Amino acid sequence: MKRITSLKGKIKVPGDKSISHRGIMFGAISEGITELDGFLNGADCISTMNCFRSMGISITHEGEHVTIHGKGLHGLSAPTNMLDVGNSGTTTRLISGILAGQPFISELNGDESIQKRPMKRIMTPLLQMGSNITSLKGNDCAPLRISPATNGLKGISYESNVASAQVKSCVLLAGLYADSETSVTEPVLSRNHTELMLNGFGANVTSLGTTATITPNPKLYGQKISVPGDISSAAYFIVAGAICPNADLLIENVNTNPTRAGILHVAKTMGASLEFLNRRIVSGEEVCDLHITTSDLAGCEISGDLIPTLIDEIPVIAVMAACAKGDTIIKDASELKVKESNRIDTVIENLSAMGVSCEALDDGMIIHGQSNKKGSDFFYGANIHTYMDHRIAMSFAIASLCANGETTLDHPECVDISYPTFYETLSSISNK
Ligand code: S3P
Image (cartoon, rainbow, N blue to C red):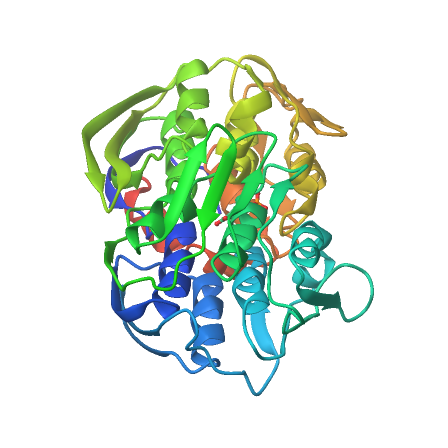
């Protein structure tokens, strides 16, 4: 990949990953048909789809249109094989909440990365609810086995020590099957798609501050959902628009749910020329078109309550910070260490390889903007180690657009997890 001279055009990013996963899951346990338009055809969402097919749910899938023939809260059948969650933390943690309420034994496992990701954070609340969940290797990671709860699931009030929508969603989903109300309190509010969408399917979820509470109810009903574009995918083009010369981009139909939109706040604080156009509500989610042009950026501090609203965007925000004047300090983000790769280490390793001066912190990183030792360029080309992490691959593909010299990615295809058409979209607007 090489430096570009301009970036121009109008693009649409693929459907939101979090909403696509949830659409399949909630559709499967609802009565009747759920239709999803704008479904993300990424490998992670296909893993979710295949897990539910293995439990007897008929799902038809044509392009971005998916039809799920739901069988209700108690209609899943025992899978005959181990459920394959692939690379997907969302599949693993959310499905475990649903499986905890089933009258059959299930086992699930995924790739090398998923087998290292922490599952104690969901095992602890599920065990408190009475679930029989075990880590088959005894290391609190997948593979997991979930056996029927001997005395059924009981409602709990759970204080989570991590701001994680996956943990919150897992507990709320198990709460659908519990004998009484279940609530989850998190230290900082994480993305709230589960709360919004479950209510759309007929559940009774209330939110107060950082506490979400679900009352068990006998039925959910199939819905028609229009999945908006994923802000985590738009993030690559927001940053590209801000850092590339002669850039003028319109990114249409982006989900700007406030629990996800921290990157917009950060880009504005750093001085990005970013406009929000045509604001509207689609399937209960805030959506708009984003207009971004080449920007003069300055470093800033990113910490506290903002972190969960941009956790997946930090790798590409780090790339933006490397192009900004001054230092950017990212704190309170130790969750980065337990993503598809340790994203503190993988970002620092690759930015350093491109000549950027930066340091890892225990809970984040410091990036000294415009610090490339080889002159006035922001980066120089390097061999990027993606560690098969889709967000590292895409972030450094964006860095390469401003790099002096050639950049290579060791596993470019790993973008298929969340954005299979990423390179096509990027080349369609490059040097235009
Ligand atoms: C997700 C929640 C976040 C995010 C992930 C998707 C979700 O994970 O990083 O990409 O759809 O609930 P955590 O809940 O672990 O923070």
